[in-house]
Length: 121
Image (cartoon, rainbow, N blue to C red):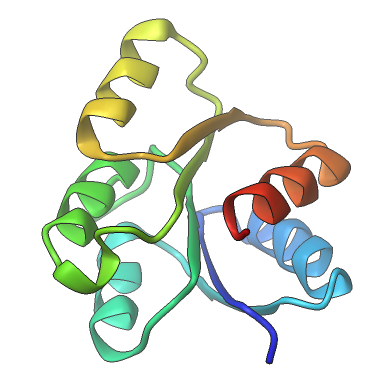
């Protein structure tokens, strides 16, 4: 059974590119257009991995990560941030929120697949 991944980004083009990359590698992928929609999805079904943007309407990525880490079912699920935010301060905030890792856009499909494979072992 393939792993279930959730991709969260307010940009339709980024969601589509990431989704195509992950589906091409055999993962089952769902998408959400902001943190609030992602949190609702995560309350109704379990994902093995969540990739989230930081800057989104309604709920940003760090708030989503904090909310997921507060749920016992997501305490150990890899949560990666994929964002344009490259500053060390934001990365530290991500780590403090419970992010497993931080990737800076634009994403490299090969690198993304390496990261997903590594954290899903």
